[in-house]
Amino acid sequence: MTDDLKSLFDSLIRTEITLWNAVDNALYAECDLRLTWFQILRFLGRHGSSRVQDVAGEFGITVGGTSKVIDRIEAAGYCVRRANPHDRRSSLVELTPTGHDILDQAMAVFERELQHRIGAVLDDQTIAAVNTALTALDTPRTHP
Image (cartoon, rainbow, N blue to C red; front, side, top):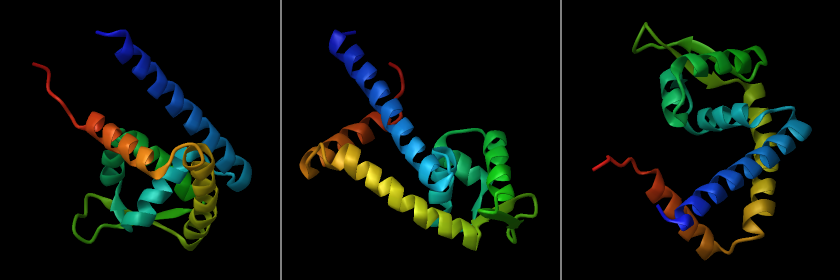
């Protein structure tokens, strides 16, 4: 393994942590919302009613862990679970009107932070190239 690969790994992790913390802190300070919750609210905002399993699959986390986070988001009044008309064994989660409101407020903070921390540093061509590279890295690979 080359030192360049190790350095790239270190840079990716450091950048992810720095970006996560900055966005999380801004969302919490301005919306009293953690990035974990925001990510789930964004997913529900894009997909409408979704099963807990669908949310878990999107983020690569366990169904049990996702269910616990959704319980907390529901207790805050941002989402609600309803019976799934197509499968009595599962429920559907959807945003409440309050959830839509906080998502709109948080999206403005999120977009501002992305613009400040990425858009102001990288041009559109570089952003597209980085996005392409990260997408390629995210493609599952099997070991030889």
